Length: 395
Image (cartoon, rainbow, N blue to C red; front, side, top):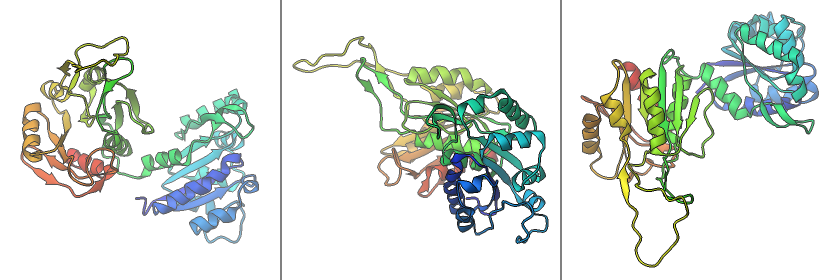
């Protein structure tokens, strides 16, 4: 995934430094070339040997280390890197970067870097909220660096507050966003819907379906990787929200229609991957319906057809993609849906096909367009998402 990419990790003397060994391992598994630079304080928390074992490269600490094969180490790494991540970033190093101080290998390399620099602060809450630290972080942003907001939680000092280093998985997502894929959607606004809507019967019960939202979330993530400004309108799911995506949470089909209707005119690409309920109860019961003898009847009415609404009200140049989940006559039904909804692409899959459908991490789909039909093999949902955007970009 990251073959041919070089990432420089700058590790400072925050207690969270130990987490960077796991992030390094994750990057290596993606075939990334990783170089680690540590401050002297960081070596008191984690031994440089750990990083050297993982990366196969010497871990740099001393600016004047003579046992290194680059001629001018900080300049060479600065030129080689596709991305530099300073994490955890202590208040000390943040202040040095903001002031242009280069008194160790990490800060000299950062100043020499020509690539994008990400900074992930990690420290005590009161230190993080100190006006001096906040002013320094503001300066870094003004200089073009991106500051990754710390999490709120229990800190090493046992206090609860903001200042916790985000998880290694989140840090990896920031790296992937920067260097994983070509930014061929830069400047585009993309709207994705995902998840299964819930139609309330009473305060306890609702009608829904088996969708987990995985396909929609994969689409939002890939669009974000490719540089788009992404809005994800999500019905309830158990999935963590993607980073750097405008997440709008909804519950019912009516909620989703209202949000999509409001945002659609500004979007360049709309992908409706949500499994929206076709029916909703005619009446909502304010109190729980009690069990009783004999048959019970629940009267339903049709929900708003969001895809059809979008197709008939699209603006010029707008690309619209819908999904079709079938159990029979998949191609014929999906081709008809393409015509009836007035959209550009229908992604069709068959619930009865092994490796496709709900809850799976893979999917087997057929891309149906007006004059073309493309059958895809079993792929991960992120790979399917990437292929869908490949088709959209070419149009």
